[in-house]
Amino acid sequence: MNHPAPLANRVGLPPGALLDDTLQTPVQLRVVHYLADQIESPAPASLDTFARCVAETDGVSWLHIQGLPGKALLEELGSRFGIHPLVLEDIQTRDHRPKFDEYPEHLFVVLSVPRWQNGFVILEQFSLLLGERYIISIHDSMQDITETLCARLSQSTARLRTHGADYLFYALMDLVIDQAYPLLETFGTTVDELEEHLVTQPQRETLPDIQNAKRTLIRIRRQLWPTREVISHLIRGVQNDQLLDAGLRPYLNDLYDHTITVMDMLETYRDVVTGLMDIYLSSVSNRLNEIMRTLTVISTLFIPLTFITGVYGMNFGNNTGSPWAMPELRMYFGYPMILGLMLLVALGMLLFFRRRGWIFTDRQPASRGRGARCRHSIRPPSAPTS
Image (cartoon, rainbow, N blue to C red):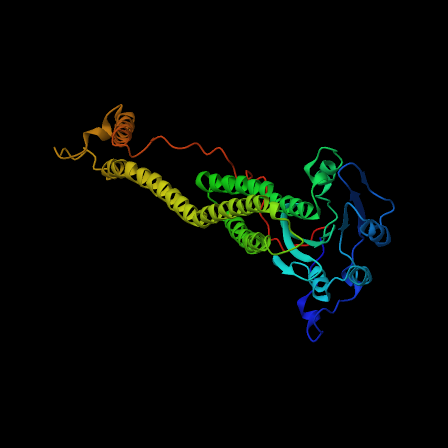
């Protein structure tokens, strides 16, 4: 995916001005023209081919542009189909927040396509133009997500074939919004693994993963949250807009429910990610307590042993005939007896600690080692990808 056109490059330019083609990528065009009983996809696809299909009296025409179109292609597209210059500017700006604009000849919608790519979460722009009996879609990626929709169109019994361009408009929006589900499921799995790793093996190296997960979630939420407003505007415009049939309202309501579901998932993951730092601090504190308890037990065990060793280390022999001397120093088995006494004292203390529940308590097995990290490392989304 290419970096978005820097907004600083537009400083001083008039509204609707297009930048040069330095950010252009190879594009692929696909033209589909269909009626209820037939469908065709002319090849090679071009704007001329699409214009001829639109000129047909019946049917729906769909132009899909895969990749980042350059200035020349956008200008030709605008001149042929009367597209407002501000729409062309929004298409080229990239990384635009989801929005809905209404013009006399067409409706314009910008959506974000979130997905995983090479371990990164990226957000691609998907632009939609709805005109009378035609659709223009532009996706700034070389990965085509519309293949499943094309497969549905190829079926003669598909509902798409019996409805107008507004239903294809809805189907494309539904396809884009549904792209969030697999990403959020993967994100949820990654967060769960990160949480488990924090509980079992808290490490300082996990902190960047938590911060990256938080930043990634904020970026996804910022780009997907306005989608609700887009769908809400479309629902309100069904009764008044000539390009949207009144029968489309139930489908738009269902699409709105999908966006609510996505937002609920984002809110849930945001709460989980927010709590990951608390889990980390608690895990570190518990681990420190375990270490301190072990050291305390070891130190406590050596207190009586050190006392016994110190007493008999004074070496007050009984060669003076004093009744207060140490007769053990001349006992034949004195040394092993003292060692046995020290061993019995240590074992007795361990048994006492065990009965009190201070040591040898049941612990959760640490099934993950240092290398057991998350399968999908959440990395900053701003890194360049291909």
